[in-house]
Amino acid sequence: MNLSLLICARISAVFLICVVFFGCAVSESSGVKGDTPVSWSPAFTMPELVDLSYDSITDIRNFPDLISAPWYAGIGVENKKGEKVFLSSCEDLFHEYGPKTHTIKANEMAAYLELKVMCETTRLLINSDSAKYSFIPDVFLDEFLPKVWPKEIAMTISTLELKRISDNSNFKVWGDVMTIDRFEKDSEEKATYFHDGGFQEVDVLGNGDFNGDDTNDIFVVVRDHVTGGDYFNVRLFVLSVNRKGDWELLESF
Amino acid sequence: MASAIEKATLRAKMEKYEGKVSHMYLDSKGFVTVGVGHLLKDLASAQKLNFKNGNARASKGEIRADYEAVKKQPKNRLASFYKKHTSLQISAFDIDLLTDNHIDSFEIELKRLFSDFSKYPSEVRLALFDIIFNVGMTDLRNNWPKFTKAVKAKDWAVAAKESNRKYPISAERNNYVRGLFESAAKNAKLSLIP
Image (tube, rainbow over all chains, first blue to last red; front, side, top):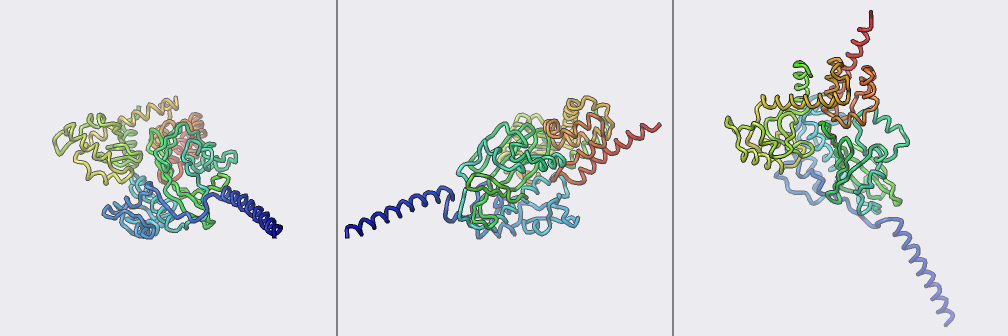
């Protein structure tokens, strides 16, 4: 009897050690486990861009309403077929736009890009799943971000210079392409990165599992500004990070 | 100095790209702006301009009211969005004066960057104005190495190829600038024919 108890105790001890060891190892290497729901930040401004009488959206099940809701104003564009059309909702935009769509009035392009990116983010949030795993650091908008985010984040206006950067395998990350000489943080979701020709505003709009790999991805908008010129661009990125902290660009819009 | 014809061309282009807005609005950076992208960096700058309330000259208090009302709004909306928050306007004549001043400032920057700027063909000067309006002096100087090298070497054909800007710059605008350089290149070749 004493021997049986001793054996049981030893087996239990071994079992306990295994649980502690492997349990700890699993939680350290797999990030946060359990369902991480799709979520969005105050930087996601689609609810403010639609008709002002629209109530604030708090439930993602209402997001399809943002797709059909009228914008604060309509914008004329040249569609994929080269026809002049008037867009007044995300639904209109998805039906008519292409990657090179321009507004009929050149000075309306900035406002169009803002609407386009927020419409695409709405669609991303609707179509994303909750994630089982999340390796997204609690804090990542900091001065070191240009050393880890992909080079596609960098602002390049010249077509041929962009091609040279893309073809150059020595350029891997954002900071390889441009030197960020100053950083200002407004919140955990918003920061501005300054370089000698201008600055880039980075807003984290939300997160969700974009590609069905059970891992949480983030949706980021980058607004590119120059100093002393009128160039402006708004770009949307879907980024993923693995357990080692390596960031990957999944999609850009 | 840009000729009268060049200035008229440049003003028309700037109006097309920036719009010509008689009331205050916010630009993409969130700065209060008026006219053809004329930045009002602070209230004092706004109060120096000839804003009108109907036919009457606006008071400093009225200008402050418009400035502060617009400043509170979200940025990067259509310029027309901001109109309902304003009561003052600036005349087309005053807008043109402000735009001419901008053109003069850009010319000073271009001469700083390209010492032979004044001797370049008119088409090249117009093309360079278009690019510097858009990307600014610092980006042009630092991030367009092959383009600026070609311009300094007066190799207009290479400058034409290197001048292309990616979306959201339109194909129309790129074609316009490339066409100016190509025209200069063609004229340069013709001038070599005895």
